[in-house]
Every structure is written in structure tokens, then in C-alpha cells.
Image 1 (cartoon, rainbow, N blue to C red):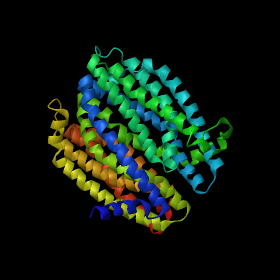
Image 2 (image 1 turned 45 degrees about the horizontal axis):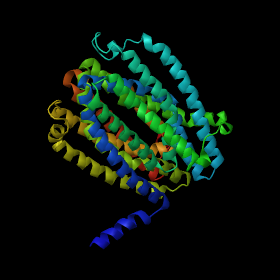
Image 3 (image 1 turned 90 degrees about the horizontal axis):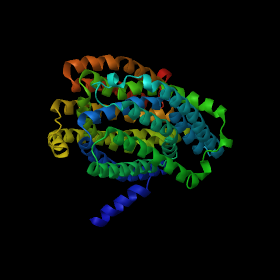
Image 4 (image 1 turned 180 degrees about the horizontal axis):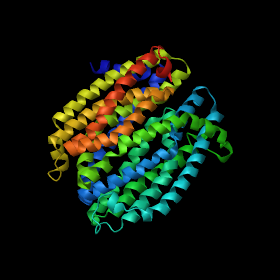
Length: 453
């Protein structure tokens, strides 16, 4: 019995299409690494809240969301690089791949420098107390806090490109490992300072914004000097003609990213303005619990983006169709797991957070439905992004972005936190239905007109 199980386990990783085997190995390693990351992330929440206060933690989450908007100033270059690099390597064009990487770093460095100058000048004139709904006599160092976050972001804006490169070359497990290393260091530091000094939002921001930056920088230097030496960026390989090519591919992704910004990053701002920063913490701890599902699902589908690019470049539609069917079966399993977590959510919150924060059951239900709709939509988006068929996605995401904020405000005033998350869910359900139809048509080679663009 044990031998049969062992043989079947080994067979799973050595039998099958080469592209599938690479994806399986990345998924397996990523599950182990991300599993540790999830545990650390869940441990950090109560530790961080106890170090500062729920309201201050909510302020940090809101600031990081606002600054996170700036990631979309990469003008779609990251996703453009992801597809172009995967295609170049699939067709054996190493020098072309190196030029795409080098040019991406060069363009992002220019954009990052301009962004920092602009934000450095603008920061003193922004009334952060009003934006974050903070009493005027609290957090007098808010300007320093935001400047630290801006500075760390602008550097990370460039060096996080290494994670895109790793994903494009079918080494997403290494990208997950970098994230885990960063989380481990953050956990150790937060645990240490919580035992030896009073809570300080400024110190917390230094740790949460600075440690990931340093980890990415160290990983970038190490990888490009070793395993990625053959495609390491150089000034000589920078070619702004390739930049135009990246922008051509990435421009549609950029508009989609702006729409995603509205769908994913505005909830904290709306909650802060309508209900107050303390409710941001309640919202986010609920999201943290159910994000176990989204993170687990993302681990599985992340290697498939570049695998779909590779398969499409080689006209392997049979592999695409089979992979899509497997993804949907996996999604069903995650949907069932989401319902199970919902059933025990109240007990989990009490064990995890104690009695300091109360999460309404209605919010947990709304979040569970959101996660199920989001994962269904996301798996189809990864296929469409991988093969570059994103025109329909562009239209629907743009429409959703335009309607999401007013709907979230309207439902938030009526139903509170569950109403705000339900606005996102409504749009994800609609897009999920349309994208699943498009993927079916493409995998069967029956897509025409807008369905094939």
C-alpha cells in the first residue's frame, strides 16, 4: 500500500508533457514555500496589531494601498516582459531575451526616478490626516511615514522585476522563496521589537517597507551572478526599440492594470472614508483568512501563465484545452474548501485574534463568495494573458472599474463592509462568465472577432 502510494507520487512528477512537469514541480515547491509564507502572514497580523493599535494598523494598510497604486506606473512593462521573455526563450532567442530584460530595467529606473521626484515634492502638500481620516492631533510624523513608504516603493518598483523574470522562465518557486525569506525576517524583527519597545507606526513602516526591498535587492544580485548570468541585464543590451515592443504588448495590460487598481485597491480608501480606519483592520483580517484560498490557487496557476505562452507559440492547443479542464476541477476543490473555512470562520477568528476584533458573519459570507468568484475569473484571465488575447478583458475591466467605486460606496452605506466587498464580487462574476466562454472558444480553435483578440 505504502509502496503503491510512493510510486504514484513519483510517477506524478516524472510522467507527462515536459511543460506540464515543469509546472508541477514549480507548483509543488511553491506550495511548500507559500504554505510557510501563509503561516507567517497569519502570525504577523495579531503580532502587528498588538504592537501598534488596530486603527494604526488600518492606517498602514491604507497608506500601503495608496502607494501600491503607483505599481501601475510600469505602463504594463512587467506583463509585457513576462510574455515577450517567455516567447523569446521558447524560440531559443537568448540575446533577444537579454535585451528585453535590460530594457525593462532601464525604462523602469527612469520612471521610478521621475515618480520619486514628483512624490517627494508633492508629499508636504498632501493633507494625509484628511485622506486617512485621522484626527489632526494624532500621528504628527505622518509625512515622514509616507515619505519612507514612497522611497522604499520607488526602489522596489525596479528591483521586483526579478520575480517577473523568474516566473517567465518557469521558476516561480524561486520567486515564492524570496517572498518567504522576506516574511521570515519581518516576523523576527517585529517579534523582537514588540518585546523591547513601545509601539511605533514609524518603526513598523520601516520594517514592513524596508525588509522586502533589501531581500529583493540581495536576491537580484545573487541570481544574476549565478543561475541567471546568461540573461543578466547589462547597459550594452539596453535597446529602446525593444522598449517600444514591450510597450506595444504592455499598453493593453497597463489599461487593464488601471482597472484592476480600482477593483483591488480602492476598498481600503472607501472603508476609511465611510466607516473609519478601524474598520479597515476588520476588513483586512477577514481577507487575510480567506486569502489562504486565493494564495493557494494562485500558486497553482502562476506557472501556467508562461506555460500557456509557450504552448501557444508552438500551437499546442490540445495541451491548452487539457490544462483548462484540469484547472476547473482544481477550482471546484478550492471552492468547496472556501465553504468549509466559512463554516468554521468564527471559531478561527476567536482562536487567531482573541476577542479584540469581532468579525461579523455577514462579512465572512461576503468574502467567501468574493473569493470563489475571484478565483474562477482569475484562472481564465491567466490563460488569456499568457496568449495575449486581452481585448475583451480590456473592455470589461474598464467598464467594471468605472462602475465599481460608486457601487461600492452605495452598497457600503447600505450594508457596511459586506456591501463594499459585494461590489467587487458582482463584477468578478460577470467577467468570469464571459472569460470562461472566450477560453472555451480559443482552446477549441473556434474563436473569431473580439473573442480572438
